[in-house]
Amino acid sequence: MRRWAASVVLLASPTRPLDFGRRDFLATISAATQTQRWTPTALSRLSLDQAATFDRLDFARYPDPILRLEAKPVRRHDAALVKTVALLRAAARRHGAQGLAATQCGVDARIVLLGDEAFVNPRIVERSPEARLRCWTERCLALPPDVRVETLRDEAVTVAATTAAGVPFTTTLTGAAARQFSHEYDHARGVLIIDH
Image (cartoon, rainbow, N blue to C red):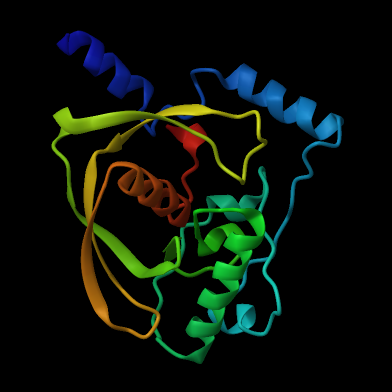
């Protein structure tokens, strides 16, 4: 049994992204763009101050380079941050997203939304033991709807962050909430499910 687990870890390694199933994924992207079912974006990188001047934020679609952006930490908790978080919440609702990272809307700020909760400068401070990883089938609104990826995620994560108002908090997420947070946290680091 241990050999099998080691193989799964090897396949899921971020040092070998897209090796397994790459042709199928590229064929899906190619077919989706040729049939007009998928229109890639090329969003500009926005600071918090720039994003706060918008009335609406768009959602990035693969292979937009903004999806590979590793977000910068938020340095100021001010009106621009509060307005940007409100715009991100509106974008999530508009697209039916249960969560998102600011980079998915072109905003270069380490912000993760999970439902209506904003995690500013989140850090995972504790994870499940490796033996408690769970397998999930995930999809992502930044990828064509046909793309589904098997991922291994922590059963539970403890996250330290601040609110948009600058209030520090720590919370433990389990099950689907832990998976969802990990998915969005990956986005904030420029990692997509196709890299797993």
